[in-house]
Image 1 (cartoon, helix red, strand yellow):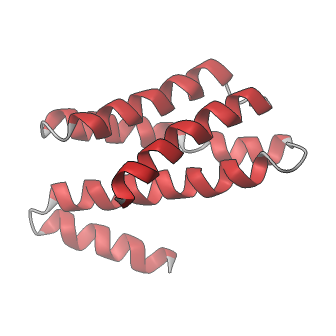
Image 2 (cartoon, helix red, strand yellow):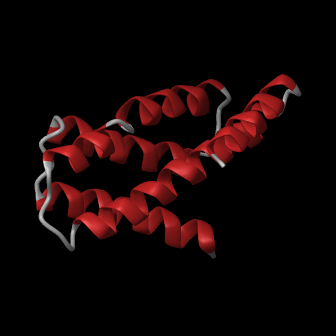
Amino acid sequence: MYDQYFMMEDYLKSNAKLEVAANVMVGGIMESLFISTAQLLEVEVTSEATSILYGQKQAISDLIGVYKDMEGNESVIDALVSVQTVFEKSSADFTKEDLNALHEIVKTFHDEIAV
């Protein structure tokens, strides 16, 4: 599945479908954050789990740049910036409060997009 995802991304980029590729990336990252934060809120948070979660910080930053460059949807940019703010505040030391804030941002985004 992982390989298929990157094959799809390469196809979209090489066929001038950057906006579609960016939307797919945002959807994947936000959905993974939605699921992972919900799960982490239910268990004891480990450094390994937060390290994996924090690994998404660069992807969020890159997507903000892509959306700004292509003058993309402002509500998507706002959601990404809000997620980035939580990542910067936590500095990979996620507390339950940080996880809850992150979950609420992605839940709101999830609920708005799903409608």
